[in-house]
Image (cartoon, rainbow, N blue to C red; front, side):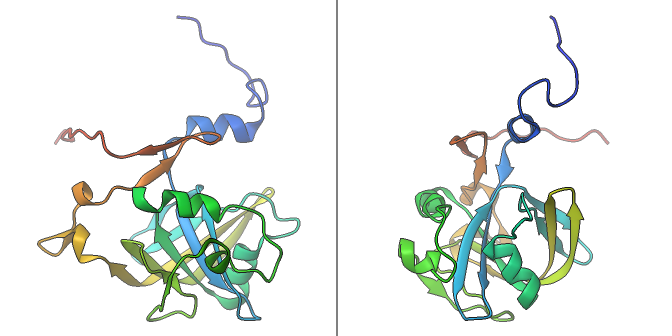
Amino acid sequence: MTHRHGPPTAFGTPYRLLSTAVTPRPIAWVSTTSADGVDNLAPYSFFTVAAIDPPVVLFAPVGRDPLKDTPRNALASGEFVVNVVTRELVESMNATSATLPTGESEFDHVGIERAPSERVDPPRVADAKIALECELYDSIEVGNSLLVLGEVVHVHVDDAVLTDGTVDIDALDTIGRLSGSQYATTGERFAIDRPS
């Protein structure tokens, strides 16, 4: 087997290389509200758990000049909601990735039902099986990207994905981003025990 090696630019753009190699990536479908009261909804596949105590998640918009509506709103208000994307929501999620004029809501443009949050002002996606209400924990500039960290202060979980009061991964059909226009479901699963 022959391996080619070199700097990231030797294999296309760094974005293309990293977004293809680091897969599948979970999708944060982030809802925010602007200072003018406009509800924004956009997907971000640079998303993960940052810490457990306190519970912190992060999403990382690429490009800061200028900031897109979602990170701008999250920084200004100090609040956002991460809606978990499952198979039945993928078409709606994809539709919210379209570029709209500032001041136009993706909720309204796509026809997505809002549900009120408990601890933060931005609404959540009514049909999301799990929604994480977040208060801004920190933001960190990394090159031309911005890491937006949010402390999870309230969680909404649909009873349909619970077994004995715990989220059941077999009932939660989350979607992962691959590369370009490709996505993956978590339908094919296997278990392997960690060594003791």
